[in-house]
Length: 167
Image (cartoon, rainbow, N blue to C red; front, side, top):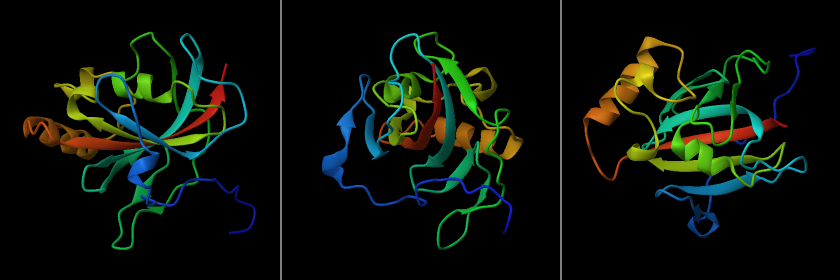
């Protein structure tokens, strides 16, 4: 598609060796998919994130980059890299999920990470009152609600995040 800007996203659910994961305070884990070379995220940083949320089975739920689930993996359907679709927050102010807040610390602008967050570090019920990033639609929010209602201590969410701006 000529004229459209390419977005550098990691391939859907790229395999990451288990040895690449590091612990996040509170029980989650992260692995760098791409190390950035810009400013580092730390307490008080204002961060803009592109994000993708998946259930523990890898099924795409929602994100700032809209995708459709396909048998071969998620495929991008919207080239929507712009400031209205990102999740922007200040690290440490409570506006991000605790696992996101802890998981992006140490990232550099331009970098991307996979976060594996247990339910307790992700959303709360009711989902509409949770910290962000929050999915837009009713369907994705219902998927999150169902996962939370299962109360499975081994259940988790995948987030793939890219720090597009750090100030």
